[in-house]
Image (cartoon, rainbow, N blue to C red; front, side, top):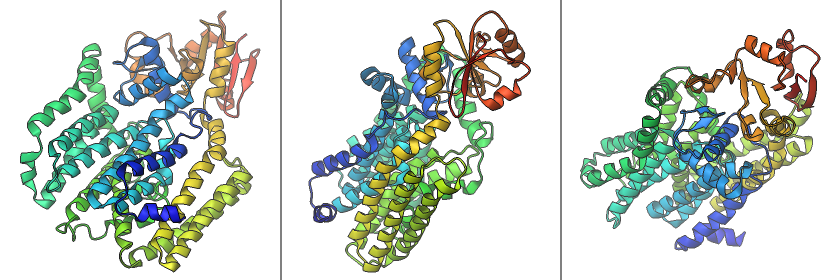
Length: 553
């Protein structure tokens, strides 16, 4: 405990030692058992299969999913996954490695920003808060594009913020790194990699009236650098695929934001509970961290704190306004919120505990309530995702964390508060995956069915699925025939002649009753729906809790 106290309170510690300590601590947590659990559908299966097909086809320009064109996302995350797969093999560890690495790098970049702007202590606390935010850790361990966006976008905005400091000796380097990282953010998730930095920086200049910064922002060299990094892939993919531009820029950006075409509509307030839950145990300190930032904008560090607040609030309201909402979208708000909270906590160390008292009591009560619910959940739910042991272990850790928050508030000890909440979060982040992911994989993974189909279906035989569980192609290592609604593959299914691989029910009925062997992945509900088509005799080759593999032979 004394070593941790010294590490958190030292004002002049080595930056290299801090980065090494953070990398070791969160590297162990983020990388533990990445390959032990099956990929979850649809996202992990999709983002593993696309780079697998890139390596198989040796084409890193045109992304394909189940061997049809798939233009919903740019390729940076696919490229990173393909690189990992080429080194470590085509497996779950390789698929998740880039996301975990990007999460770890985001923590390091957050530390660097906090140290440069507010001192070493604030940098360490901010990085620890980010890494021990339960949702940040959970999402870093999944194969999704949002962590890659969060890392590149955060780096871009942080380098700009550092460049605007008075007396900064490496302004040019910081600005150019900001442009390069913004270009990588575009390659990670599309135009929001340009929109977010542009809008946030504009609002910052507008509210602080620091328009003179435009003269030093290296626009003449930064814009060409941005284009040199971001543009080549867009040019190449457009030349090879004339249909790309309309689908990517109109359908995937404008229509995704303004309509419910993707079926992801949620109410405007959706991200309030999402942020509160995913940034536990620190989310209760967000209002305190945001309070007074406009009033204090003209103080020594006030302009940078206002910049962080603009960053977090703009992205939060942008996605709240969007008609397409998913939990990971909120990730880019985590680094600025962690920096704001870390700066506030570091300042309170030298003053009164009062600003943290009410949030600590609230956090204590809420964490204890969550712990109690988790302990009871396996005994009350009909088909729980946690065993009784898992619910008890994780629930008790939450209860201990809540009790620690209350005890620290009563003692008015900031260090005890930070150390206790962080240590309990580290234990939860370490203990939860072995209890949660196996059960979740049973509900949301195609691994068992894909491996079974790959083993039993001879080369050239048809493997079909009602719709498509997107990890099925990854585990079967071959193309899957899709029966019924192609869903996300609808656009790709219409590019070229893919009619033999996308069948309606009448065409599939003729195939099923033909002479060629067919291996079909289907659920009990789907089988009941198609009972007039898929009639006995057929052979059940294997079954999981969700699906079965049957054949017409």
